[in-house]
Image (cartoon, rainbow, N blue to C red):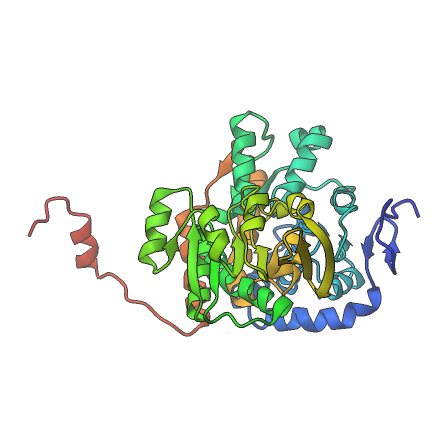
Length: 437
């Protein structure tokens, strides 16, 4: 078929030309059960689905998405479809697609190109998702937006209304593109919403990263020296959860304020050169390449475990690991044993890719509920602006505080939790600049 991946991995593929390419369409029922479970844990997104399925504000709009194909993502896709959107999709990481979920979405009519392990065909899948030119792009890591801007410039400049970006790494790339004058349509920084990164990045990454490590290794975390590279939102969440499991936590940082926060959170601060000698488990969470390099591998203990929870596998220099190794073998799913020239063994998890998605299921549905509500509402903003004729600047745009508050309040209401409210007198007091002691 014309759309058959040119370098597709060996094994079974199910494909309908121009519509989908997934691993095995027979997995659809298994995927539907997973999606049903996620829906039961995502009340904010489900309330948006119910509300906008009546008015269908996305009718006539096409959305191309490049985001991890998980059960939670499927709930977001279904919400867009219920609101009238025509959706196409690809995965944003070669090892994060749940094949059962992808099959369910394909069987239910979604144009989707994604399967676990689509290493060589990663960008082929992205390009298939924009064969039907989209009005909106939804990205996680900026690969879709970058592809549109580099290979389909006319589409980016003249057709796409706007987009959203889910990750810290993607936002960094987009800001650099905007500063260079090479961003051709507005993009909302979903990652920077308080109801995204203070929950998804901290609590989601913290829990799911340890989940991935445990599934890949089944090791005891208590008593281990766990080294977390980066004490930002993601790294701090990982360190907190590791400490809660009884680990001794060590953080590495390049930013002084972040290092102080790490210390006051009860972690040690070391350079990676120092930490490499004492760590049992290493987790990178920086968004920067070459965090763990040749000299670090050579300093590590026999049996050290290395993994990454940042967006790209470049945080761990795998070519340098291979250069100091004499052999490697897979000893468990998502766990490769490298025997170094010095005789020590190092275990690399999930090929250095996102361990929480490649070796586990990603963030819990409850926390993705708020992140994906931000995605939906941000695209709704883009559509409303387009319909009204409002021209948004070709910039990375922060989300309004009101959206954060609405999503947080909706989440609390779904939990049956209420809050205090200011009285009129209190409101007057805090706005009175003459009020004194």
